[in-house]
Image 1 (tube, rainbow, N blue to C red):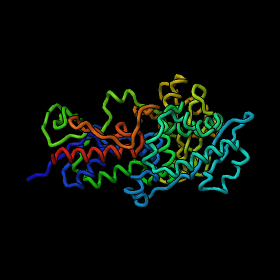
Image 2: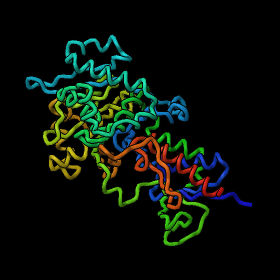
Image 3: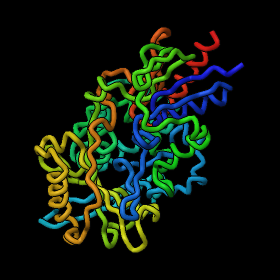
Length: 415
């Protein structure tokens, strides 16, 4: 007697993790992917010897799934330094300051004592300590105001938020006003405080590729469009088929219109413009005024990202910032990015542009008052969906929804 088979539409990490759990339980799976590659938004392309992730992307070792399931040593992952660098224009000249994490790099962070207001330093310490004492799953169980309001509740000044936290979290939330629910901020900030931002040797695609290898590539059909007519009917190229169960592991087109977009510009530079394995935050970031939220040099962290003797430089421009400046195509984005970078690094005229990417549906929107939770249950009679749009906009959210979807599929098959 053949095993019951769950048909999964979509091969992002949510679909792949769902399949992995179902196989571990003893069921069979079949995955359909409309594109030519697996991974969804966790994809990596090789361009002229450079590894270009789909948008600037890192993996977080502090997420619960990362700690329990991901072998970062096997992925040969290397980490950014905790903290950040901030660039701003002072007196017409660029100034770069290094802000090391005072909890993990106390000696390196002593300069903060003279550079920042004590009220801001005390507010950050209170927030960090408060979140360190909280079970990470409980970060979703408190207030549901905006991130900006949450930061202000700790007494953080607007100038401190604008210089450090706004450019950082604009690039994480993909919105510049910090309107995202404080619940998501607490979860991400807590995870970042307890772990590292890392890059695998083969790019972020290494993890979905690892999952796919575990599942078996023979179970994955690429370049195959499919959709669910109902919980047990799959339509593949116009042919309907009754199956044991269907799981939809991608964002429905109707919801993609509500998702946030991001532009990413990739440069080939003869050298690293700011060595040190830190993110570089735009300390003058202001929507309607400038475009770049932050920059990174992935090849400083993970040398495999660039050919020997070259550096990969990545600039992130959030969709709302681009819209506020009426930037609507790759040529305009590249021109604006170069104009802003030239203020900080005049030799950028020697950088070659490798690619300009736009992801229109990069992340779901989770504004204040959206009642985010760590994971969600399912309508017992509806189609089973999974993905970060179901739980919350992180890799952990995608994993949580995948595991819930797998459990629901098992329950239905066994009932």
